[in-house]
Length: 142
Image (cartoon, rainbow, N blue to C red):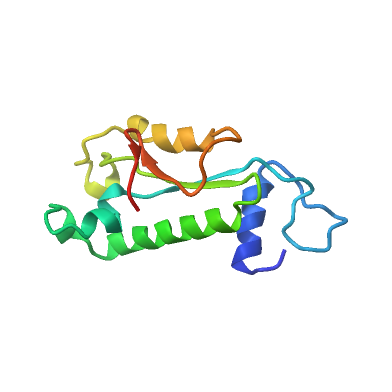
């Protein structure tokens, strides 16, 4: 497999269900198009739309962690756009403020609750969205 990001990403999206097509000379291509799902875990607290509002109480916390989530959101949209003509869907999920080691278990939600939206997106049917950012309440602004 070629080490370029695009081909590596495409291979990762296909590899769980398919094997590479040995007759296709393009590394990282699948034998058939998979109905693969890529779900990136993001955070509505890191939304550029929400953090551009001076009245947002979370705006003061927009630091390095937030910047990495913003970059994740950008790559989610880039992959969704690049893969729009395929049966691969790329979305972002906001699990909410979840009690984990990252926040010393101070989050309000349980891990089991936080998993609901990423799992829903991972199980989308062929008519489901791609390039979406959502939580259990619906759409989240980028």
